[in-house]
Length: 178
Image 1: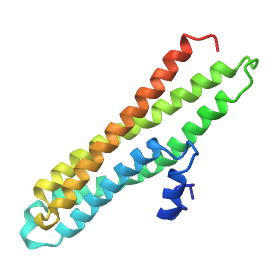
Image 2: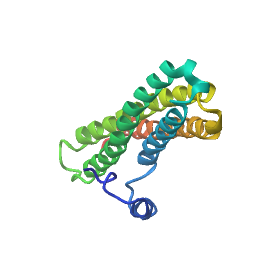
Image 3: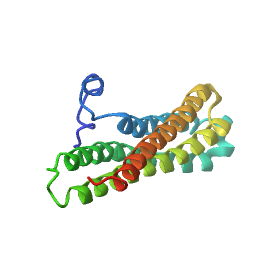
C-alpha cells in the first residue's frame, strides 16, 4: 500500500500543509481527478436500477466501468507524482562535481513531466464522462455530476501547471553549466 493510500484524510492534510515539498500540487491534482471519478461512480450507482433512466442503462454501465479504471489510474498517479518529485530532489542533491548530476536531473525532470501529462490526459477523459453522466444520469445527483466536471477540470489544469514548471526547469537546465 502506498504512502497516500495508507493515510487517513487528516494525516494527509497535515502532511500536505507541512513544510515538506511532497505531497504537493501534483498529488492533489491526481487525487482531485480520482475524487471526480468517485462522484461519477456515485451518480452511476444512483442511476442504475431506476426505471426512469432505463433507456440509458447501457451508457451508464459503460461510464461506470470506464470511470472505475480511470479512478484507479489517477490514484496510482498520485503516488507516482510524489515519487517523481522525490527523484528530482534527489538528483539536485547530487554533488556538483558528479559527472552524472545534470543527466540525472534531466531524467528526473522528464519523469516529473510525464506523470502530470498522464494525469492531465486522464482527467480530461474523466471530465468528458462527468459531462456525459450529467446529461443522462439521475437528476437528483446533478450537483454531484457537475462537481465532478469542475473537479476533473481543476485536476487537468493543475496538472498542466506542474508540466509547465517542470518544462521550464528543464529548459533552464539545458541553458546552464550545471
